[in-house]
Image 1 (cartoon, one colour):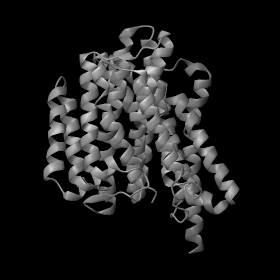
Image 2 (spheres, rainbow, N blue to C red):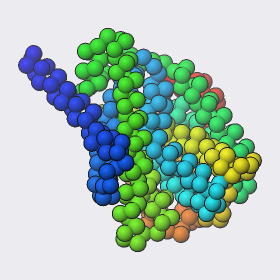
Image 3 (cartoon, one colour):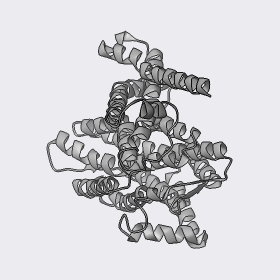
Image 4 (tube, one colour):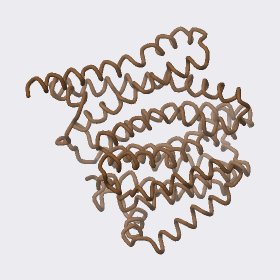
Length: 407
């Protein structure tokens, strides 16, 4: 038995060193301006850096649960994981303040990232988690009502945004207020210091004092954030360049290829959690990311646009962008209804994936799929399981903490 323990510690240490070293080649190259690399090499090295950062984030989040509420740990994880998306989308909004043509790219990137998160990210986690546990569904922890509730509220508000033909500063005020309430509620959650740790997270927990463990958690979060910050932009741009060589529409590249690259850190982290039989935490991280993007990111776009334009103006939405936003809202509403009872079945995940794949394969069908999502949501609400209907109503009408949000 002692020999097995030694081998496990050596294996965990090896995994830790590999993850920490993966971002090194690209961060060194980035410090020298990329060294004139070919886009394919940039994509490879920056992609490996993001992969290493994802492992570091997963361990940091698990270790941090010893000292802070899980909801807050997931919130920090989500914020770090979506840093690339913020950087890319806010830069589009800033450029739109100078050249209005760029407004379409800001909305395309934001809506694409949001739909990818649910249609691909959520579904992959549920399928992997159900396969790992040999269960037909993934049960979310009661504490994750917090993330789901704020997702519901942000989603319901998002339907009002296109009515003004722009994402304006009032929208930013409301969305920032929702995000602030989410942060305050997450801070008040309970600490799960009895959660079983595995792998390098367990190695850190057993090798250091409480203070040392906290320093390692902060260091891993910071190191991963830096690796993602210097890698995500080049990774997305290199993929866009490669895609452009094959004549792919620029709008579609911005909407799907760039968000897929910028969302990759949180996707990898969630899959790692699911593989380690922590499916609830995996889906919780992605729901938290959705709340982040639906509140803080969407609210930041008109602020960046107004600052760049030099006036109190909102980010304009043309007909196509309004349809994109409504389709994203409809998908979010249906997905929130599915998980309102904290039970996410493999069948529901496959339905979400099928709808996403169809709308991806059939462009220019935004209105049709918007009505499909809304019709399914209405049918599920009226004829679906009573538990989902009851819990969804509670999500809308009750304040966080009133029915077990804090675990």
